[in-house]
Image 1 (tube, one colour):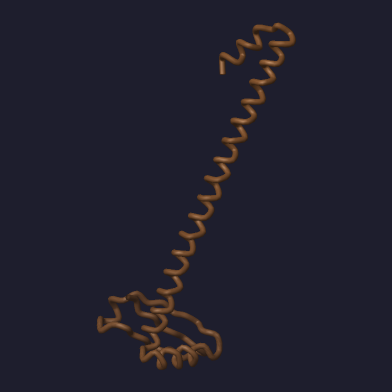
Image 2 (cartoon, rainbow, N blue to C red):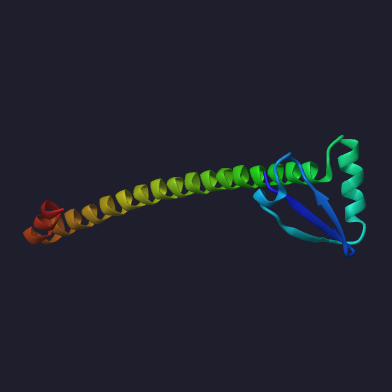
Length: 122
């Protein structure tokens, strides 16, 4: 877990969540809008957590949700693309059948054996 240094209105709040030396932890400075520091303090106190532990937990939840949401959306898009591929393959099959029917009709009406040869080539 990292170390977060929160900054609100020029006041630094040093928030540690683990008993490791702060130099070994990742740090980030966050500038908060007016009133957010107090809101974080109130929420973390209600959860009986330090501000840092609370912020890290919230970030973990947001990141996990973002990753699972991305996986969900990606799987939905892949399913949609697979459906579209299947539909296009059916359309190709239907078009090929129509093309063969045209060659057969042409060969029957004109006696053109080359049209029948075209069917054999496919």
